Amino acid sequence: MTQRCACCGKPFAPRAQVPDQTFCASRGCQRARKRQWQRAKLQSDPDYRINQRAAQQAWAQRNPNYWRHYREAQPDYAQRNRDQQRPRNQPHNDDPAKMDVFDLPTGLYRITRHPAFPREGGGSWVVEITPVAVTCPRKMDVSREELIDASTICP
Ligand SMILES: [Zn+2]
Figure 1 (spheres, rainbow, N blue to C red):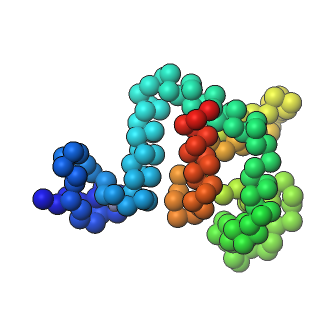
Figure 2: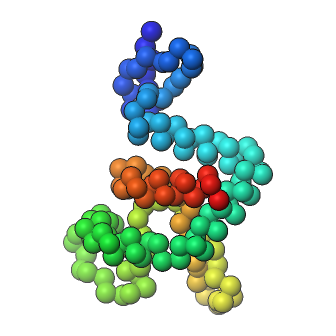
Figure 3: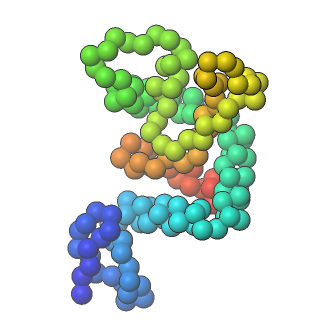
């Protein structure tokens, strides 16, 4: 008996031990299943949410330069990412503050108001952008995803 994979849509045969299996066994689809499970768990389990947040913050503190180093080590990746995010008909943006934002890979980030900049008049905020998890498998390198996954699971 076959079933259609909830991720890639291809037919597959569920394993006998898992009769209600909805994701096929391919690596990408199993990753998607794991992310879906984590999202559901984050929604339903406050303790899990707190633990995840603590683990992610600890990871970010241990790896303060991770994203910058990653981009420096993989200039093609950073350039491709900029190309995707900047419309081609716009001139190159030389504002360093804005360039940093353009350099961020697609993913999930936490934005918090920076404590050193209490709210100023005019309604603009100075914020800190912290990577939480990267969710788009097409735009990421496998080793990086594994690093992030490991950090969320093994604090
Ligand atoms: Zn699949």
